[in-house]
Image (cartoon, rainbow, N blue to C red; front, side):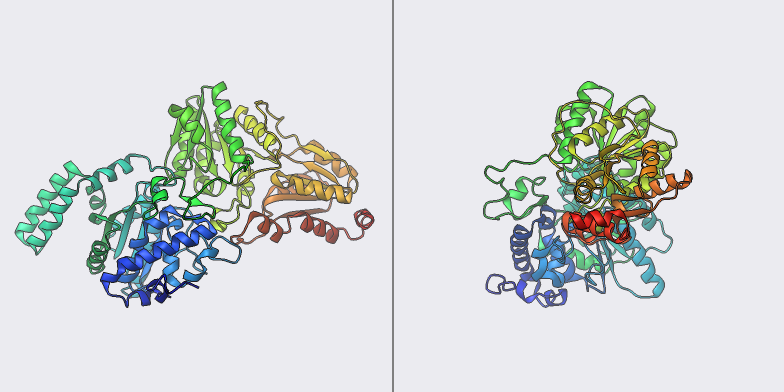
Amino acid sequence: MIDPARFPRLSRIAHPADLRQFDSHELQSVADELRSHLIESVGKSGGHFGANLGVVELTTALHYVYDTPDDRIVWDVGHQAYPHKILTGRRDRIHTVKQKGGVAPFPKREESEYDTFGVGHSSTSISAALGMAIANAQAGNDRHVVAVIGDGAMTAGMAYEALNHAGGMDEEPDILVILNDNRMSISEAVGGLTRMLGRMSGNRTLNALREGGKKLLGDKDAAPARFVKRWEEHWKGMFVPSTLFEEMGFHYTGPIDGHDMDALVSTLQTLRGLKGPQLLHVITTKGKGYERAEGDQIGYHAVSPFDPDIGVVSKPGAVKKATYTDVFSDWLCDMAASDPRLLAITPAMREGSGLVRFSKEYPERYFDVAIAEQHAVTLAAGMACEGAKPVVAIYSTFLQRAYDQLVHDVAIQNLDVTFAIDRGGVVGPDGATHAGNLDLSYLRCVPNLVVMAASDEAECRAMLTTGYQHAGPAAVRYPRGSGTGVAAGEALQALPIGKAELRRQGQGIALLAFGALLPVAEQVGEELGLTVVNMRFIKPLDRELLLQLAQTHEGFVTLEDNVVAGGAGSGVAELFSAEGVVVPILHLGLPDAFQHHASREDLLAEAGLDAAGVRASVRRRWPQSDAPARIASV
């Protein structure tokens, strides 16, 4: 429970209705307590940090001015929603964020009526809020709808699709879009829009004149006001391009200081009474109120548990185990050194996808396209058309947003693009929105595409080389975190495409492991005396080996860190069916359900994909075969 002595105001706020009992002059004190509580809580639990600190005043003002939950607040890039969760009934549980059974890391409709729209991927808020506003108008109610977009999310095309729709409707929707401009994504925000917003926020003189003129002129329909409005549009276009939003049909206000509580409250109260599409531009500082986070906005975007008095520090003497992302990072630089045609693309995930080193060593060959996955893939297709060798570094869950481009722009044209797919399979604490559970299913059905899944670090490096040297589209999928500890080496040697690896010769049952579950298969295979195959390729499968094993084994078990439906195991069954081979197959993979946030280990065990779960599944499936006899003797 929160300490009332240390948090005299926040301890009295169980829900936003309690917040609205305070006088407005106390709101900054509420925000100060909220920020302190947030720092302490994330210090205990870890989690997203900098973006949340930046929206403390904005969140407080929103819940003070708007009658939530009846009024709808839709959050974008959900990692800025911790203050919202604290003010909406989850104050005393926020330290459990990302933990199994704890508070969800992003807004989640099942968790709270205040979480009006589930989010994890960015740039969805305006579309969702517009949909709510339209539905409310159709139903004849007058609730207010607010979309809060920021932390780089305004760089994605979907945001502009929604703005274009909302601003062009004959019946103007009543919607407020708040652009929380902290000039950051996970890395620094990039692109022309960022430069434009910088010019807008920098011209405070013009904005001061504009706001003062409104007060002096009064009635906006009077002749003097109309004249000044035309004059303003002319001069504003010369100084700041805020006309972009106004030309799209939104009434633009700002920019204002997102840490000035009085300005926020008064502006929101004014906008709450206005009709039609409104856009409020708010300037905030990522990491606000915690000096270390303000000074290192990238490093403090998301943190492990830490002591707020000391900050995030490495453990003395700790040896960092290489992750799959590290393997990719080293491979990318090594391959770039050997081939000047290599170009690397990331959709705003420089740190997460392991491109920091490459961006420094090969800046002219590095392209951060911002949060624009569709553009990233088609950009790569265009590069490939002109003889370049693009590598798209992307999370599995984010590649879903560019699936049409993968199919239409890359695969149909059989273009030479390599996809390095990080966070494949179970990811863990970030929950269902960030899980890479579907990629083997949605990739293996695409013609012309070679699909691989790495079982260890060395194999990951070899697969990346294989995909890169293949004259066509190829995808290499690897999980979050570290592998088995196998040294990746320095060689750039390719694997024979479509060839699996027989890791253990056993009898009766053959375990076919795809990717990261190979160590589990090897443990169970050793215990039960079964054959173990490292399949390596999801597409094409090793037809020759599979048909050979079908002649000598009475059953197969497929193991994959992917949903069973349409996954790698389905490909095995399809191959046997096409060849007229009738053999029992047990498909083990992730369930036909979205798993909640927990550790990767917990989620794999929950799905029965740890050694104990696989062993139990084999026993249940073949209770009368030779396998149980051997099991009993082990």
